[in-house]
Image 1 (cartoon, rainbow, N blue to C red):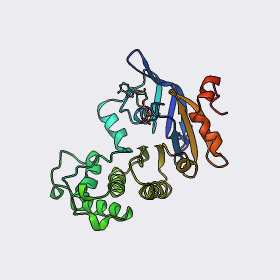
Image 2: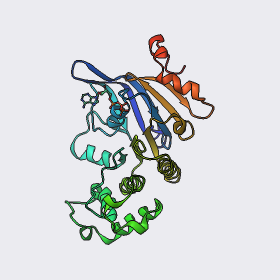
Image 3: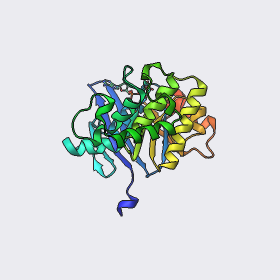
Length: 262
Ligand SMILES: Nc1ncnc2c1ncn2[C@@H]1O[C@H](COP(=O)(O)OP(=O)(O)OP(=O)(O)O)[C@@H](O)[C@H]1O
């Protein structure tokens, strides 16, 4: 296979247990092409976050393999793992900004993987990086907030700052774990639009977990449904209807052993 055709992410028979009782992922196999935008759906506890965390090696499988951007995540250590994580941006539900720092400094921290040594204070970042951070802030519509404390922004604005911070990594993959779960519908819409635009313009591969079925239906290229750690639906979003998606949440489907591509 040529390097250009290599999938962005391959999970092969990934099982993840927590202790003796919790089976968070159960033989998950999934191949994501470069530039593909994938939505993960499923009930709370179905394994969405665990799956995302396996993609950049934040968590390791109990069995099976994860290959991200050509790197076997299960065996990568030290510099190799750091380099992989630099190429994979992560946006979380709770934004995870440093509230007492300026918006611009928060965005600059996204470049830490590209710099040597720690940085404290905006002035410790090279001028070119600060300019780059400002350009990303402009892209998410918040250049005029650059020198404001991050905790003075609304939730939707903070999430857009988190997206700008992730872009500072110059990522090839963006993971988003319920990025709009704590936002009002209008802010959620804005953030999802932004993610979609950025994924198109940067040819980013995106894996995004969501709880909102209607948002998911109109957003990604492909929808993957998880139930009890298993993939129970994996289809392109075009042509999908709400009932098909709702089957992911149905106990009847679980009891009947709904097949992955049913
Ligand atoms: N660090 C952990 N230790 C023990 N159990 C865990 C851990 N992380 C996740 N789990 C368990 O693994 C299962 C899957 O959790 P996960 O967070 O991946 O689900 P989720 O689909 O992302 O849920 P939500 O939509 O609520 O975020 C759950 O039963 C959860 O309690």
